[in-house]
Length: 461
Image (cartoon, rainbow, N blue to C red; front, side, top):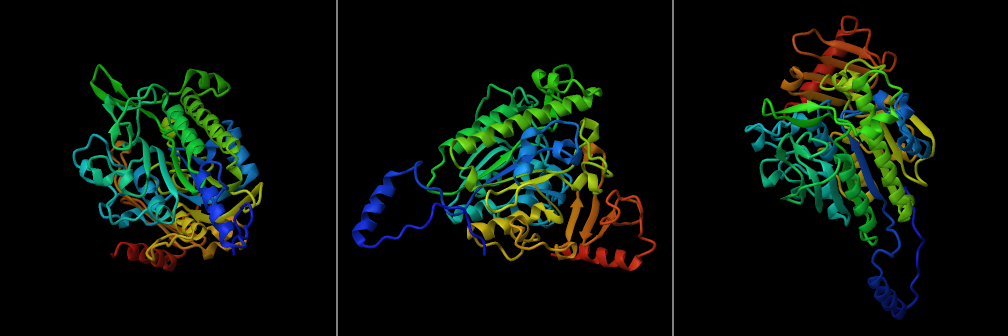
């Protein structure tokens, strides 16, 4: 049984008192007592690896993320729903494997692709934002969407979000907030112009939402930064979009100790985002909402070394299904519920947040979810074993921009099977070999067969 932070119960002894209380409470909007159910703030970064956060061993200073870890729980075996943006976000919001999606969203939706303009998350694919809205939560999306851009039916406000402020494509120019030279920044469904750096634009809006929410209702804020992902600039000579790192000069000066210029540019974007997260935490403190807010930070998948990210000491990176592409930072702070300065080696997944949020909000989770509630773990009511976690399956589509084809993988207990194109299966005991250096497929063919069948069972629908 979970007890949520609250101000205590009020006993109303007669109907007159009840009527008086109702009249008074009707006048109290933002000054009303916090709800018994927690606010939920999910902070999602983009293309950031395990070695890109200070408290995970990075040389990049991230004092605000480190503060969250000091005040909460840090996962060491937390998995993204995919190693590519779109399917990872689909898995997070729906609690289902991306290869189960109607439009088979196993690769990144490309903003300028005519084919991808007709693909996205469909109306029958239920998000936890919709579930939270049904049980009285205010729901807001600030930042990156990347689950459909061509049709109204794909819009965030069609999938449980009361408000949307941000971009629909995979990346934007950090200084113009456009995809190359194409407008892609919205309030609701209306295109708008911005006049600042993308990380700051996102943070300004998130602070505004935190400061102006109706305190009589709990809220969910989906804060999806596009940092430290590369920017999508525009080359006037070739008249084509171009991938380019776009840190602020002031942030570059703060990481002058990093010799490699690419890594330094990446690090500058990380510390800029970390400073923004500090502003978010300050807003929670200032409005006295911190004690009743569950804060979760995680990254959408591993980093891409070609653009300065680091997944060391793990193998692989973005768009691969080695640990470097899938094992990501995850920090949880829930005052009064999650023990401070704690670390867990237990397995967790983005797929698990839907059933977790259902449990703590009083909502109802669909029966077909692929995740399981993390509530016992993040509240230390129970410390499950590795074998207790439901198997996680990943199937990625081809990624033309990264020159990679479809991969398949599964993590079940201590075992992980990876099937890369045109290669023999790779089986790793990731409990003992997290760096995936010793392929045991020839030694344990029976485990390979079992895991292959488990993957196949998820594609049979």
